[in-house]
Image 1 (cartoon, rainbow, N blue to C red):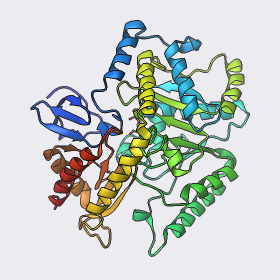
Image 2: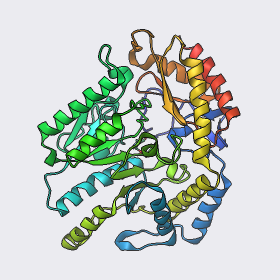
Image 3: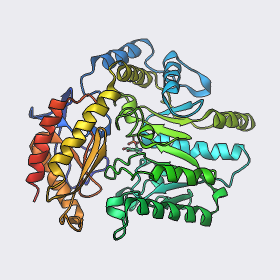
Image 4: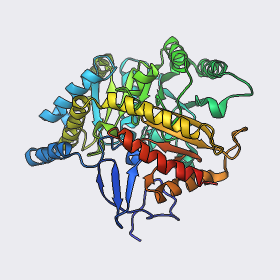
Length: 439
Ligand code: PLP
């Protein structure tokens, strides 16, 4: 066994699959077995595995300026072109972009920029961040403290309280409803509970609330109708900023440009990564509105510099990969394609699994979905220790389909945006066989 510490891994069960190449939506292992990448690797390879245009853009950048840092405002054409392009796309007014390398660091950057901003405008006490149960925002110290999944917190002693992280309910109606509560009653209850919490904490101490428009890693949770409208009304009432973590939902995944568009969110701040470059090169962005940037300028004069940045912030090769990826999304109408084949995928999943005895809930939007595997369809009781999820994941793999069991017994789907209807049919055949075999 090689001396690698694998991320997010049970160390007693490693090196079970060694992938050696990819093409389109498929990957191949060392023995030549072919798999559909049903989760776009880790929710990111939107253009699939053999996009020669992105590879050429990367190669050209490597041949011209393979690296230049961006500290002190040293710049290069590719980072400026990328920021200009993104500004035309994001639903944040007069947007400015801080580039990094991962979703986690983008969220950490925002955590720090919020403090910097509120210090700059003389409100240092406005610093707490609200996050939701079952939220996944990464694993660095601040982002990891905003993440609420048990495995990401257990035994790491995350400084959740010291960092001013507040938790509120997950908007998952299926698992969190009480008795005969309707969706509307459920929404009213959890929004009221949030408002009570804000008042108890003192709104003047709360800077922002972070939300994944559709939560991904904790099992693809699509909040009920009306949830975001009511949530935003409460946050605006108390002058709390809306921070959309679009690391998974950004760039076409939900059938629109951003998950915010799909879910009716008007964000003040955004973070994204993954599909920004279709994973051909690591890159992330933390997005702030112009009014926040203007306030921060004054502060840099007082302190001397904005003392936050990574060696690879705005890496030219990453920016070239992202720029070409965005160009392809636009030219090939891939967000509209994702909406169309996404509707097809959702319909196929519902047709195949709504009445399946092992499936408690089929959920999702666009090209992101999950099946909740349950031991009792009537009560929704779950299997112990993610046993059904793990079995289904293994059977999928045996059938040539790579998916992930997340949050215990949810099987998550998130195929590359380029997937076709025929390929969805092939995926569905493999998935159906695997779920039928999971008993
Ligand atoms: N935010 C969300 C919503 C994510 O799903 C993820 C990763 O899956 C992250 C942040 C962290 O991104 P990374 O793994 O690139 O640090």
